[in-house]
Image 1 (tube, rainbow, N blue to C red):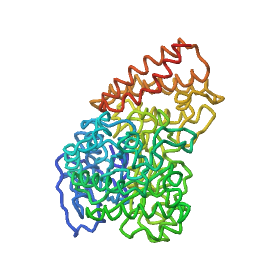
Image 2 (tube, rainbow, N blue to C red):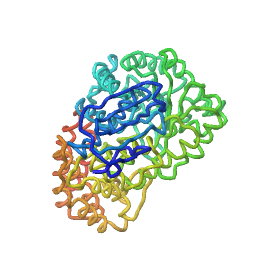
Image 3 (cartoon, rainbow, N blue to C red):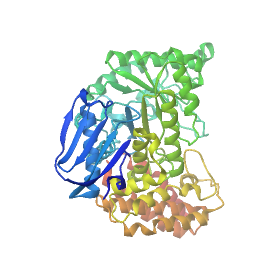
Image 4 (cartoon, rainbow, N blue to C red):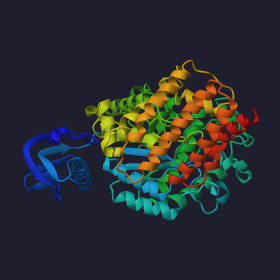
Length: 557
């Protein structure tokens, strides 16, 4: 096989093929600044005498080996002859995995994912945390969540370091504190202790945002940081700060009216910054709130990194990136896999969102690309649903200009699902586009997802066509030949995802209650089994709650 005919993830920047064969032997590796390559860059030469990797630093040598691994995977005993020269667009290429809504992966799952991300040249990993670290003085907050412990973080940190991945601590520190504030012992920390109605019209019985004027809130964060951060070798720390829904509506209302909500927000952020500095870390925070107050952007400390997130294809990465660049602020672009609130993703939106972020991030000088994967409303998407977004994000962040849509399908088969039958790449891609079929597009989610979640239904017009598309797309699944230890689990995950999608169509079309109940019993049983195949038990009751409610409704009809 010619070198130019091979599939890579990500695609190399420069590739030249020669005639001849290279014996499949351990490469000779030369590392040093004299190699004349950019940071993290490498040159891989495949010659009749064997492979040779040269790199300016150890990370580059690691990435050269990763590319060689992908070549060996396709050529096995005898390699083609040629040369690859390669280096990344973004110096930081990250993934953020939600472990707080509601899924906390097992160590086996996390270690396997780290291996994959490292091969795809990801070098930054965050585990998004609200309440899923086992803080010693706060058992009531995490005892039902199967949290990560300090010892487990130590193990993950060492595993990541060996693969040139920076495991970055993440603890949301203002909004999204509902898993803490629901407990009576923490009500006094809350902006609105007795609950509020959020922007979607949903009323909660407790708050979700810390009250910035409460001294005990800062004392709590001081304690949490002191316990969390020593488990990480990273010099970065993501303190969150996004979506403080009720800020200015409760205890801080008078102060927000006096000096402005933006000022109240920034003043609290600056207090957090001082805490982070005490630990010798660089603070990262989500930039959604400060964007509403562009006149305050200039006051962000010089050492802080703003995380500019947005999950739609047309998100304003260009406009927001220009603001941060003009203000001289460091920032990352933070798109997403589009997997959450969907069951099987939003492929077209995902790829366009990733490209938009990369194109405008490079244009305006973003120093990093952080690809996010959330778990809102029960974390119903199975992990392999996110593989397309992870792989595409890794490829685009490394070499933004080189990838077309079909490249990702082939790469999924070859380097992700390892499917000799070349079924899974197309299946995952197309099933991720079922969100386009019902005839109703809902931002940051899919209509079929909400046909399960909500009691009051808004019926899209094309549910019968959507159901046929789901069945046709899943039909080749039995023919897949995945060379992975979890191949059977992946098969069953996509099968149950298909059941969920078809149930949504049937519920929207008012199928008989007996039929819906029968579908749900199988879905729930499989969801429980598949959850435990990759994840800890904490959070599973929350994930099943809506499904069990739908089952009770069907059984009582």
